[in-house]
Image (tube, rainbow, N blue to C red):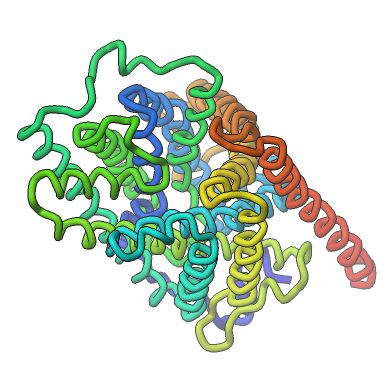
Length: 479
């Protein structure tokens, strides 16, 4: 059996992963996975107070997360990242569950992000396609087609699939620049559509508004993803920390500036969580006489989100691949494609189950209701592994650190504090995500879907672990 963090076939010297991602590729990867234009729309819908929430989420979640990832990835650089760290700190079961919940978080994530992309595609021809805005059939077909295309590119390999990630990152920048330019132009010509004062920027502590905080915290997740592909990154020990630092600043600035510029163009009461960016562009383009901006921006916003889904598809497919090597999942999960050397079974399985979630999320609700439920499910399952990560960061401080380890500034005391803050923020985010959106018509059904769906994913993981453990025991005795 190959050691954890090794590709099957590595012991024999075959199918060793190629180091295809340099600093530029990794930075663009962090940008496309770390920034989602849909969260700018969500933040703008909440008004100017979102700016303070952005800063708070960056300090209370992203900063502890990034510093923990830098130290843990330099301590234990084996491919597998979060899985390896959780296993080292708490044993096989914790390592497996961290990997399982992280992987399964993408099953509701893919439909949600592709629903957002679909909602923006409609603005490419708003006069003719607007009637599809509440048509669930359109959203289902669009999500299935784009998910299939992203899967096929990643099966061919990172050296091909990375171009989808890179194009998605570049496609994100142009709409950001457009909304910034449009917001400033609208402010210059017509004045700000939103009042920015200390009063309006003060976050509300009403219960419904606190729920919104969890979404913006979720928006800063993702900086741990490249550690799952460490063996495919050139000079990973130096490249990952540098890309994290530059990427973190980029992510925070884009979120804050994007939110401000949307609110310069539109009051928060006219912004929706699914189409807020393109709505701001549409209204401003019409006011300033530049209507041709709208279809270009709508296409690029959709493309950037398709690129993000492809990037996550590539990263987390490596997790069941590593767990499959440890024989907790069926052996096929560790199979590499004979030509392209990619975990093609894991990629295809992920895509198929993601397609199933598209139908489950849509059942019995509106398009927006499905989107909100999928987002909540994605947040909860995505943040469970962060509990393991921050707990591992705390516990592993007791192990000696070699000269190659990049320590948190301030050493152990600061590392302990960051782990506690990150763990507390993660726990609060999970708790808030169980609650349905304020405008959800059928709240009991929404809660049932969120809790039932997340609970089912966790229980399936527990069952797979124990079945795999029992299957591996006779083989161990026989050897």
